[in-house]
Image (cartoon, rainbow, N blue to C red):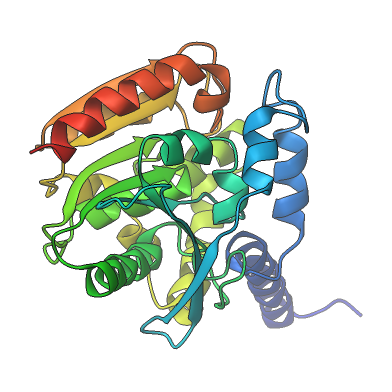
Length: 313
């Protein structure tokens, strides 16, 4: 006996709901393992010429970090790791990591440069990442709220006269560009370095789904439904481009010339939209999140010149 049409509709609806939740789970839930494995495969060989005995990595692994903890508005305990400058310094830099990464892993090569430049380096672990609690990743939206708490923590612990730089890579870049549009940003923030960030979560999902020849509207609508129900925010709110339009923070935008994960064209859109003092550096031959590894000398030169300009003001 053939199933009736209503039963077929119910079955199709149930199947769609199940698949939709699984897609949401794999993209947003901390417990998902598939994205991490896929990302590890996608970045295989992405750090040209860097080996386990690279002096920056060896140095990093021999450092002693001070661990801090705060609680965010969702009740999650968030972790961060501080490497203090060798000499007393009022310069701090808050480092914001990318998707399915953590502070120490994301910044393990560049930390020596930051430390040698006289910064107290704070490596935060975003909610649902690293050592921090939380169930769902929100692609920079709620992560920016948490980063503001870390800024307030620094001001309360070390004084309001300190000077803070913001530094984010990939989703961490989306976090700090979103943060730069927050009207409650403390005056202690002097500059931002925004490396390989996307214009919005929707734009980023759409770009990569289309590359995979998957109808983006079907997937995004499904993810957005569960996102609003479980994470408490919509994909429309995950929009660094709209936030950066309100920024007053001097920003150095960085992107890899050959980035095909977050397409290079996005950095120009962000740059054009930012009304604050700004500069841009495109790393020749670099793919996603490998601009420092590929072009360390140029990267450091651009970073130093930009940061020093606004730290002195």
